[in-house]
Image (cartoon, rainbow, N blue to C red):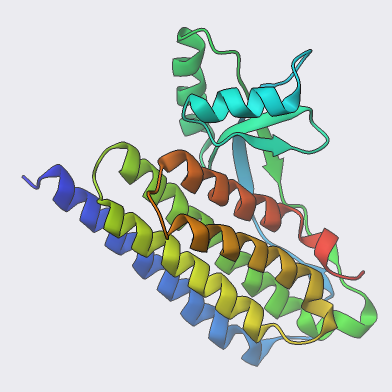
Length: 230
């Protein structure tokens, strides 16, 4: 049987490999970009574990959640704080049950990407927009695996820094390749996440900080329509 560190190394290598594969697909997707459809599509569903603020200020709930090991991500428009994000409902439900047993009042907020339409002048950008979103989604999953492996002590700080640093570099490269004013708002969001990841990779990395960055990327995927002109 393999040791915990060996299993963690395997998870780490698989996640990075998956990320590289996604980038490879991203490079080749534009050859067949069609102009027949202006609908940006994508099957993205995220399960956010949140705490409602109630009568307590959002800042106080975020600080308390962060101190307890959660991401402490302020959720705009919901008066709630995100502790973690999952890709399977069963995982979110299991964690919610564990936290409820400890007396923590949390709930699951399910968010799905519903697609949006591009303006006639930008129909040719559809495939690139979709590929951007797929790459950011895969990056978020790399961070999810990294955070879990950190919590289980299956990877070292060096491995965690490598994973987070690789994600940051890829986001920066993605923004650099997105040319033109059409991508200006999207690129700002990519570089905001890149900067946070770069800062994380320069010091001691905690799972909750990696989860915060993961949630940032998930929110970016969900909010695609906010960043592109209709």
